[in-house]
Amino acid sequence: MTVGLGETVAIIGPNGSGKTTLIRILAGLTRQDTGKILLSGLDTSRSGEKARRTVGVVAHDSFLYEDLTGFENLHFVGRLFEVDCIEERIESIAARLGITSRLNQRVASLSHGLRKRFAIARAFIHEPRILLMDEPESGLDQQSMTILGDLVMDHVSGGGAVLMTSHDLDWSVTLSNRLAIISSGRIVRIGDTEDVNSIRKEYQVYTGMGE
Image (cartoon, rainbow, N blue to C red; front, side):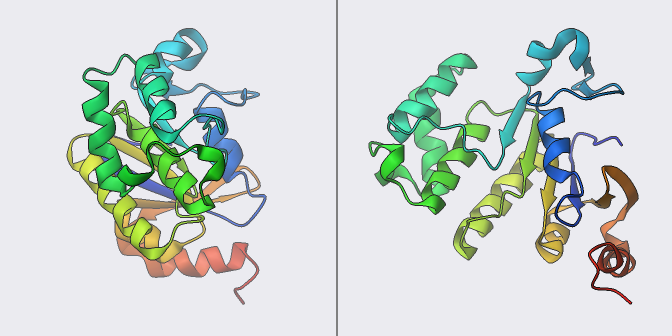
C-alpha cells in the first residue's frame, strides 16, 4: 500500500486486526518479519534513521517524559530534530492545540486528554513530511478532535502525507482521501471515501456487526 504526498489514508479494523502493529512497524518501533518499507523514498532497512526523521508519530504511548514539563518535552524533541527557532515553534503548536497555559506543568500532573494533546504537539513539532497516527482521536473530546482534524488537513494541504488508524469510521471519512480495512494483519479492502457505504458494510462484517 502506498500513501502519497497530499493524501490521508485511514485504516479501520476490529481490535486485534493489526492496526497498532502496522503503525509501530512503520515508525520503526517494531521490526517487520518480511517486506520492504519506504518512507519518503528511503528504504528503512538501509536508511532507517534518516527515514524516521521525516516522520511524526502519534501512538498509544505518548513518548513523553513525565518528570519534565510539557515545554521541556517539546524542547528536547525539537533539539533532537534540529528545529530552527524552537521556542517560537513550541509557542505556535501549543497555541494551535490550546495547551499554552500548561507548558510549564509537569506531564505527570496532566489529565489524559492534555497528555494526548502534548503527544500530538510532539509529533508535529518538527513539521514532519509524514504523519503516522494510531487511533489519534482516542481520549480526545470533541473540541480536541476538531483541532486535530484542522492540523491534519493543514498538514496535507501543505504537501504532507498521513497514515492513520481509527475506530471512528465517520470521523475518518471527513479527513481521508482513501479508507482501508485491515483484518488479521492484512489489508483486505481499500477504496476512495466515496465508497464509504460499501466499505461500511464490509467493515461491519469484519467486526461481527454485519449480517
